[in-house]
Image (cartoon, rainbow, N blue to C red; front, side, top):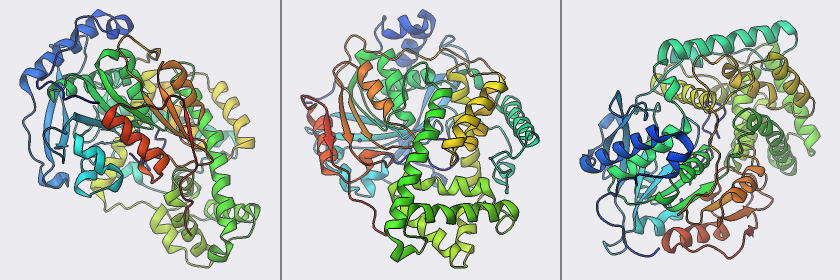
Length: 525
């Protein structure tokens, strides 16, 4: 689950060949029961059209930066599945064929990296880059990526001018007064209004159920009878909703770093839970830095490392580094360490340089690059989609008193992320479009066993989400990486995990019971 413009996820991923040519959605699916006949019929019609039309694959446009032999194409879907013959939008997709023989091929494996707001279009590059974790799976599957609705090339939405979005320094997220809170509330309401002004026609339709319906149309356009899917972070919630609406359309599904699918958690409570988990993983990083004091010279205890962080934060609050890096930018940069073990050493190295008197590396890393207009457009778009989907998926509290009480309480014990997270999500309190009731994620007729993978100390998607999804999806199996917390477990070398993911995708094999794996190798300083 993404919570800033920094990438929220790493990504990661039977016998019998699939039938060539898509089989349209059956007339009565779980979609009928959950969302009403009109949308169920709408997705069925859209899938039938997509199956008949297919995808006109061609070399990807040069400015997309996707190398050959990966090919790109488009899938057309209804903006509103209740009006399938109304306005249509286009979704960008790409693929690379399986690397094995025709006999080894098991179909297409679709991927979502998270967000909401993440693009999956880099997924096929795991084959062109010869990623060792995916060599076996790529023999059997075409790797297929896509931009979800509103993202990237798929009818992108926007809430503010991208260059304005990245300008810095932004206000300190930790309020020092009621006036600071009023200022942040005004900014959040202004952001919500900007979404309505720039993308209002899309906002009511930017929901996870609609993206799940899009996924089913892509499946049909690919000529696939059933879906093979890998979802990471928010992609786990997308997968869970798809499995609920289309249980009989699932063939293989791996969900990695799990969003808690409980209706009570989507999305307000889920973000509060993040604040606790981020603090835990932030503490883990400080302990690691202290254990490597010979390298970083930031203190030989976590408390001493924290003192260096507090000094840096106070200095940036008083005078932003380079005129652009204040506390907000520092939080945005340093949260990379709680997200990913791969960020532990780089983040520690930059802090070490700063303490030694060299601030430029930190300014370069945490400050905006106004010359990177394409990157700024991507960042703004990603944030817009994150906000639009989370605000539309569920009803959010509208009482400022509740937001203030909850976040003030959490900040006392979990100060690293709490207020930053609150302000990011506060536009949902004044959201100018319909807010829905989340799907009741559950097992439906025909759903096969789903493989759930989770790190025990994950910050972005706390461990409770994996237990909750496992409880709701009967026949699922859970692989828990114990004493580990890097987000996106299937993208990390850990034989205990990797071999089981391969076995499941290649043969459908699930362990007879849930599995605990030792942690992957610790980062090296």
